[in-house]
Image (cartoon, rainbow, N blue to C red; front, side, top):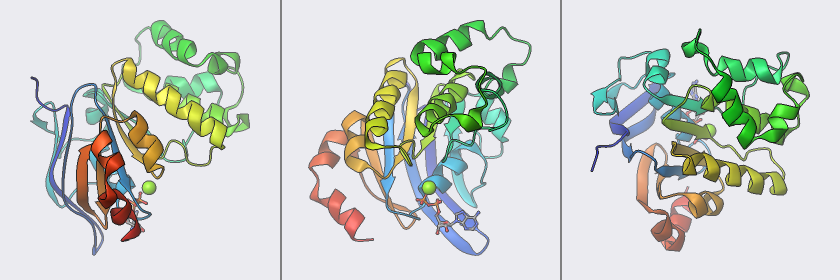
Length: 237
Ligand SMILES: Nc1ncnc2c1ncn2[C@@H]1O[C@H](COP(=O)(O)OP(=O)(O)O)[C@@H](O)[C@H]1O
Ligand SMILES: [Mg+2]
């Protein structure tokens, strides 16, 4: 068996004087879908930002393919196969869908992107139809597709997703989870932050539960779904 694609080893992260994460350790193996659950302000987004390098930890290590990347920049981590679908999508509203997708391949400038566009358009025919439309005029569900498509343009091996179902109608949440499942089945590992624990665990392999910056529970998705501790971990906050 190969080692983990991503490992966080005893990560402690501060914002100023405030300790936000305390001794977080977790792993994502190649092709795995792992969810990171937890209540509001428990440190989920901070964990993803620490993985990508947007936030630097005060202690601990971020390890990708066995290499310590803690001191590496965001682009260097993207070059190693990480990509993010950020909270609230963060598309460029006054750029077209196609231009937004291209931004996902910034580090591959000069390369032929035909296949990558095809891959995204096959997954999201809707994105193809809307390719010349300004991203700011898309519906929430369409924006989410473009955000996932943009992340795919860098050919990631690990996709970080921060609350992908936030702000979507119930029908679109269902569709969104189907899409995430498809991306996973195409071989991309996913580390997904979600408030919707039951839904996230229904497609995940494993999960971790954060409470005030510490991992209080982890296990297979099945065991977490059956766990009373999961409810307690949420309600105990
Ligand atoms: N840039 C920042 N500066 C100071 N505090 C922050 C910053 N970002 C987040 N926080 C605080 O860190 C805590 C964890 O935030 P976050 O990781 O966004 O939680 P979650 O994603 O689980 O809701 C919260 O108390 C939040 O207010
Ligand atoms: Mg968050």
